[in-house]
Image (cartoon, rainbow, N blue to C red; front, side, top):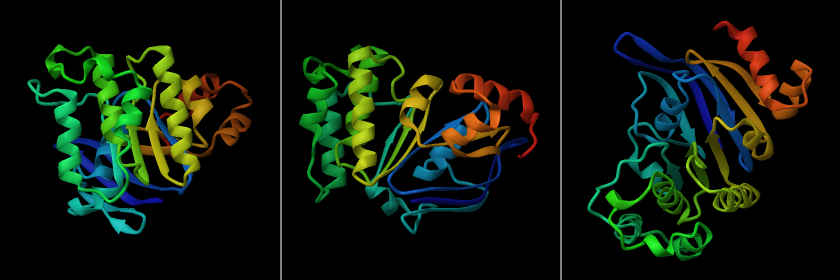
Length: 240
């Protein structure tokens, strides 16, 4: 479970997160959606410890993640735009993560590499890989130690349909195993397929936090994209 209370973050005069309080239950997939610049990625990076909040608390399975690098041991994180050493290969990165984590949890990297069809690229330098292939590398690194908390920022961007479906199946498998999963995606049909819950952010504030079917019922739509469009038009920056 992830518990976030009264989280604030500003970058100089820009208030990116303004009092965000949410609880993400164990064994669920929660999707964060909202316009560009609404604070989605900053919230995710705050949870994993890559951004230091100005105020507020974050706890993953009861353990604070703020100024606590050890809390990341059970967290898998896949960035939307990951920055890797360009001279390293995917094999180098897998071995590096394996060495840093030294986890007692079984390493399933070989299974994941097969899943995302990465075999033919394992010994190529990262600078030679396409955006979609780099996404595959990111998914392997995020999932290889079967995290109990999984954060995925636009996980299927640039992936072909076969690998997209395999990654979605993997997300459901992780959720069914009892992990807490948080995703962002601009593909709303994908969110409707994967997510149990939705958090809608607008200008750093939570506008909606509830089950997917609650949002559909509230807006009178059966398609998530239309429901989200309705919320966007209604929000005007006000918390509801």
